[in-house]
Structure formats: structure tokens, C-alpha cells
Image (spheres, one colour):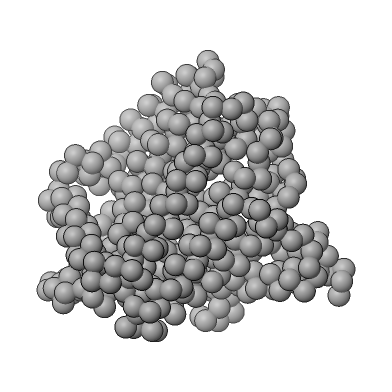
Length: 426
């Protein structure tokens, strides 16, 4: 038994769980069990083993640990404002599993090899996600039919709604991989792996563009710009930035314009009132309501998951002859689509202050690293803020998002002092 749960094997279980949470929620054997659920089960197992074996205790002086605990406490205290305890517990469950993942990540990721292994898993999960996005783009109807057999019903419903709007929804956050891939492209010694890294970047660029999601495209621009700015100032890079990338985008623009009639550029220019303008004004209305909800319970908030219960009936339902439009509206109503607004409404000024404290700590640390000679941490810094950009205008209280959020911060912490690109070579 001791051999099964050795420290080395615990790391392998952890890496397997990371891959499972990155993947879409595939069913396993029955509808009540999917790969994301299995990941949570593995987190519980690893956490309990670490506690019982009392191995690799996290240093008490770890600032990130104490900031996380403070944030966790403020989220927990919001129960005092909750009127819908069931909704609170549903959201709180994700928070607990995020905490487990945070603690085991902080405990197990101690060596350069651990960081490399995590990067490999992130890239492997990204490949799977891109394969599925390719199928959705090329054969949407086939994917929706077959998806009923192996994908979580709620997840498939969101994909179906977005396919009807000529969009590709996939909770992949692929853009966070770009800094890693570009760094590998420039530094890997083996030309085949280097070329694959560049091809991978172009694939992510492709689906950020054809997804027709404005947030994804802005994440792409942010990730590319800061990657170039920080560590990619070579002739090879300029070739990519001023030739390969523009040619790829122009090619995609031409295809989408001919086959769909609009692109993400049109969405950024607010060409469609229904799809582009109304979605923005709708978010602003939600944010205004969210502030009103937060001010009604300014200390502890109205409770995790309780935002929906305080919405006006007109913001919950939409009168339409089209079932897809009604479903789209109802699904969007469950979240204010903005992390600051959600935290304020549901956890009050206490929750908002603890989160701002965390971000302030991250910014201070990141600025110091950016002006240093350390290269590896800079990669994860760009990845982290790319991911954070998503949360500004989208739902972010999912286990997958929160796991990646804290994992990237831990990678920044653990990679300090690492300089050699060979650390990430696999």
C-alpha cells in the first residue's frame, strides 16, 4: 500500500487528474460520472494521503497560501447572506475542490521536472481540445449527434446553442498555452518539436479566430503581444509576427466571410445589433443590477450562487418564439459575466477586498519578475493574465477555470530562479 501511494505515484495521480479536469466532461460508464468528476475524486485521495503521511508540508511562511486561505474564508462567510442554501452548496462544492487542488499542487510541485510534467499535460490536454474544436467546426451536426452519447448534457447544450449562432464554444482557454509554445519554438533544439510548437500556435490562432468569440480573440492578441514583447525579439519572431500570422488571419477572414458572412472583426466593430450590441448592453445591465444586489448585503454578500435569486423576473426569462433564444437567455442569466461583480454581489466587500489583495500581490510580484532575467516565470505570468482576461466578462467560477487560475500562480512561484529553456523540453 505504501508503494502504491508513494510520493512519486502521488505525482502521477495528480498529473492524471490535471489532464482529466482539462478535458471536456466526457461520461465514464454512467451519466453521473464524467472525467471532471473523476479528477475531483483523485484530488480527495491525494489530499488525504498527503495529510495521513504528513509528507512535504507546505511552509507556513508561504504568502500565496495565506492569501488563498483568506479568500477561501471570505467566500465561506457568505453563507450568512444566503437565502438559497442549495445554490450556495453547489457553488461551495467547486470552491472546496479548488482548495484541495491548490493544496496538493503547492505540496507536489517542488522540482523543475514537476513543472515540465505539468506543461506536458497542459499541452496534451490542449491538443485534445483542438481536435474536438476541429470536428465542431467541420462537422457540427455530426458532433452534436455523437456528443449526446459521451458528453455532459449541460455542456453539450451550450455547444449546441453556440453552433446555432455560428460560434464554437469550448471551455479550453487554449490561448494561455501560446507563451509556452512560442518559447519552446525558439528554444527547443530538435527542429521537429520546434516546428510542432509553431504549428500548435497557428492552430490556437485559427480557433480563436473562427470561434467568433470576442473574448477569445482578445486573449489571443494579449498573449501574442506580451510574448513578443517579453522574450521573442529575434528575426525568427519577426517573420512570424509580420508574415506568417497576418497571412493566416487573412486566409481565415476570407473563408469565414464567404461561408458564414461575418467574423470576429465584425463582432468587435458591433456590426450586428442582436449579437454584438445587445450582448454588451445586456452585460452592463447585469453589472448595474449586481452592484445593487451587492449593496443590499455589503459585508458578506448574498451568498455564493445566490446572485440569480435576486434578479428581477424580466432578467431571468425572455419571451421568444424560438426555444434556442430562450435557452440562451436563461443560461446567461445565472452569472453576471464579470468576476469583480460576481465576487462583490455574492461575497460582499470582504470577498472583493480579499480578491483585490490577491491581485495586488500578484501584480507586485510579477512586475519584479518582469524586470529580472528570469525567463521561465515570465511565461507563466503572461499565461495567467491571459486567463484572467477571460474572467473580466465571462463566467469564471467553474472548477476548471479556478484550477488553472491557481495552478498558473503556483507555477510562477515554483519556477522562480529557473533560467534554462531545457527545463521545459520534453
